[in-house]
Length: 331
Image 1 (cartoon, helix red, strand yellow):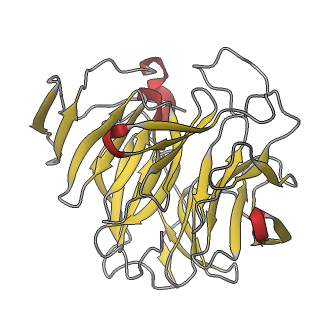
Image 2: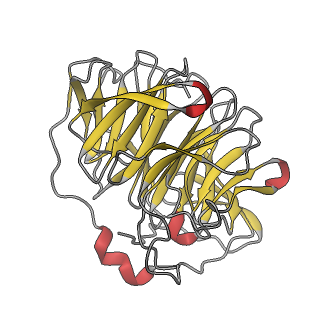
């Protein structure tokens, strides 16, 4: 599922500024051109056709429903997360890096040797919390890129590979733990009895199982009021909604829609954005109200960024895209 294509771009300095043919400005820190996973290039080609664009919910800004390509010089993009200012962070997992897309429209190499970070989210302290699945851990990346390992295992057993997460207002972490065999692992099977959703309380040393009634959980996001948690069961092609109780307990599972998803996000109207075949938007009742095609084989993640939180930032295969919206994000 990984590939690489560089379009008129090169960075070689330990720290430097370069302008690529796509017009973007890139700032590199301790960067080198030792690209990984090049042998898998052909697997991640552009997609030929997707579901047609529509917007009955009027969530996209006026104009064509056509995300703008920012850059396509990555191997596989994931983990979109926005900080309080509106800067967006995302991962290039095969190349083991985290990038930042700033409010000034600059691409900055934020962190190298990033633990093969996948899903990410900012906690109440402003730390970037990462599903670092190189060693099946949860990281908190603080000032000066200092890494604190929040979680290493479950009762002495390796996690499958933390995939995505959402952090509540109290700092508790809900995360999904599906098993996807990685080429950089030496193991070839899970040490656990299933693929589950966990809850790690703030300051906690061990997580509790929050949901075990899923086949392969992936995308996850909660509502700003902390009452509802959406979980994509990508292994069963469904997304569920749970009621969030005390200490991260989940109850009253209900089927939200018949679609699985990789990353997910919410807007101010309570609409849920799912990924995979482009971006599909559902209203709070589970009605499909929009589809945003993305010209890539797989759309992996997204979030709302910018000062006004009205720019939808999309990670998709080798590329990153943006689209102006009528609605604001809530993360």
